[in-house]
Length: 410
Image (cartoon, rainbow, N blue to C red; front, top):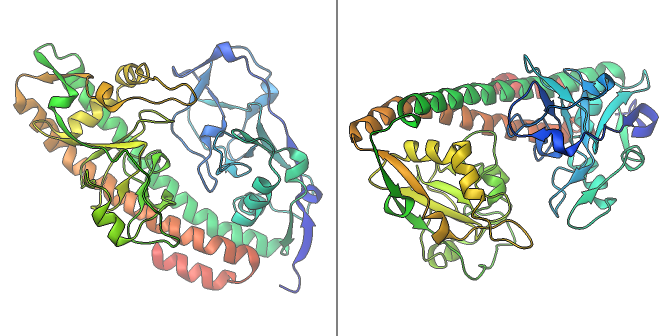
């Protein structure tokens, strides 16, 4: 630590603003141009490879991002600002170009003293992000600026140690990314299989969703939350917006005591293979429950499949046309929201030959189990990365000890 020196980020980097792409040319229909937005940043930093927005208009070629470029989000739509200021790296995506949108900053290294990957990880620490949020402007939408970002002060080790620290954290992130991509491939395979078997199927009956599910709806008064983390998390919308189809318990921020968990939630609790569905804010976020753990928040409803496979139900609700129909149920004035009775009126085409559904389920189960294993590995590696990150960046844990921890986990 004696050789570590204090710097401002502005001594080492510059932050370039993005281009104001025309709103009328932005679409959710895939094109070869992916528009990088604040929605592409995970809580805690890193690039989210889901829910892309695309662009089909003209633009300056100088705003095409390269694989490995470090970008930072300067706008956050949440009141908590939980992605504001965090960094991400542009991934490799064959056949696509990533476009540098406004309110996204491109980080350029301007000093030989700094390693780009070390700066990237510095901008993923809680200390850095806390500084950014503390200086943010706006209430419902939070903003930061290159000037604010460059004011952050931190300790910088010598170049060889910067590279070693970044290498350790990169190795964990690369493994996490690989597992996410495996799950994305399996997700795409499941969707393809569903479409081949059922989307063009004509021999179906139309059944309203209410007849196919039992509902867990814990709307009403808000329970008293625990002052400390417990074994009883509250599953909110952000826990459904993960990179795969499973509830992300790591994103839970509110907890209740055992007594509250057992006595307050009269509608019951979600169990394995229930589908959780968001009804307020980001309408239509979905995730499977993989542990008999947690209680649902007031902006989430649980759907427990009956007389139908939960895998069939999930895939149908995931179809873009179905999601569009659900979003059209929005009655919110201040923020998007839908009523549960309206959701339950959604019509679901169900094959008359039920054998098809169960054959589909039998195909899905091994894929689902592989995805679940990957998901749990992601959780383990993410916890290790998030534990090592502040300790490595502060010098509390040295490189050799961290390398031993990583080798034991991979």
